[in-house]
Length: 413
Length: 139
Image (tube, rainbow over the protein chains, first blue to last red):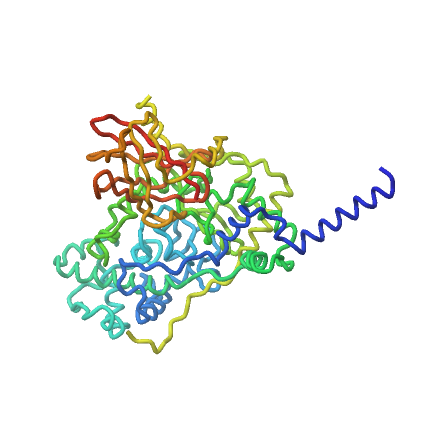
């Protein structure tokens, strides 16, 4: 090649690069850009109603739920609240591999944002509403560690007026033991059994209402705008990216919707399909192997607090349970697909914090090792080192604020 | 042949492997119908209650006619399908819940958990026989 021709080719290449950087619209086919729009937060639909929780959108319940969420008296040792693990300044999670309540759990704390939009909650999806989910940790021996009568007494002592305004008159608790519940220790269970059926029902009703108030607060915790969203908006409205993403991040985005196949599960504006998949994540040493969604799907169908239960405010319409896939081998060791929004702020990763860094996560997906139980759905991606670096750079563009939408304090309904 | 079709429909929900190499059909093969069953016993048209969208639990009406174009009443149906290029089945177990009018039935519990090419397979059984219609849908 002559020196002149080399100069021309170089000039063309340079101008191409400059052009691509300033006019990102040309980087994407129409179909690809449609997909980018579908991943943008702008595609998020309005908050869906939760008919199973009649106070879900009552501002009084939001305020009560917020106080309950941070109240450590809702625990056996007076030191654990929902907010202990779901810390607002850390994306409502705790940054540790296994959550610590009154003891140490076997699972990674899940982030709360946008869970009002998920049909099933927990890593194995054993709960079908935010309020039913909130009740689980309260009775877990290693999380809050308390009991139903204890919690009902906390409401009577500290929240009587607010509670009664929302849910009606509290039951008489003068004769109930300080600690009794069906999921407590042996003496708690014995004390619970000794109560009359009506007392047990009344106390469980208070317990359920605690969950419904907490859910009213939690359902407003949503994701805000990320750099990725601003990029899509800029290209969509102005036809150029304004340098919002770097070339490495854009390369990562191309892989994300292409060769790396991330959008097979991480799709839609929340970057999750809300399903459960076995991706061959290793079991954590010293913890028993659990079978994930296989048990979770069976559990939600018989859950005391599911959509069909007497505690639900919409027992007649529980389509998610009606058409649920159960007892299928693909559910073995399948776990919930988390939203990738703010993923870079949430190390360590996976259901028991098995991977310390995003680099480890991407390496796992690239190698696609055999699952410890069941069958991994992954195939090796054969991405090179630069690909993995670009993907990680892109994942870091998905961070944005996570905040509860505020409720006007003077609002009364 | 019918048994094979039925077994394919039944198994698809259990196959979950990324990347199968299945070739996307021509654009003319896509749509809500009318579409014939494999052995041409039936033809059917789908009518979603609302436009089909990924990740949403939806319902679909299906209108079935026989080879003479007459409404097929009293049909039993099983629903299957999935994404041939990804090798996975439907994420829910949809069911035909009731007959609405002569030859028209309601199918509930339909969800597609990502965009792209989906097969939606309806196996129809009457005293005329059993046959499967495969709709190719693009979400």
